[in-house]
Picture 1 (tube, rainbow, N blue to C red):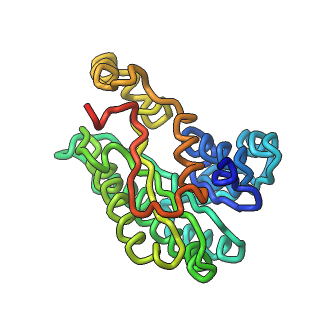
Picture 2: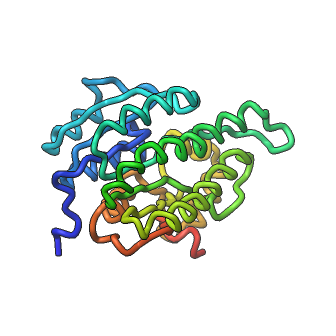
Length: 252
């Protein structure tokens, strides 16, 4: 049974791998046997903390910088990765801009949509071409609780993450019969840089914690099991889902 989760010999691309959720996902995949290509806006080619963590797990690591707000940079990344055999693509890179909807700058909206949705579609197109040709591959998006809910003061982020949930279904409808599984993970309230402002607000932090049945904020490592599962043979008949990892938030 353990072989179902064995990723030995696979190569995984993880975007947003330098810190937070992406870091934990990359390490989990490496510990399951995958070699890692880590991509982030400020990712160094070598000497990074994520490289040290992956190599400590006995796997190889390649670091590639990419500004996901720049369509040309994303296209160039797609061409680079198209020359490699990629078995797993984890679309995790993202950003968030907080401002009330009535005052939300259009430039912030455009930037969030480009990074969190458009760039992910473009990169997936480029990488999935080889997966479809081989009739084998795994694509995992990082969605959000705001793929299901509206949030407060984050209209662009909510729109993008709702789009990710829909894109996951759309790609799955076209690609599942061609051997490529497309799914998403929706993290709950995880203690990362993206939630620092919420955790620093005593009122918001208390209200959020009171609603989480598990009684705690999540940690990036809480995403490890779901990531390995959706990247492995154990999920070969799972397509088009957005899997919440939220301490029970959506069930409340």
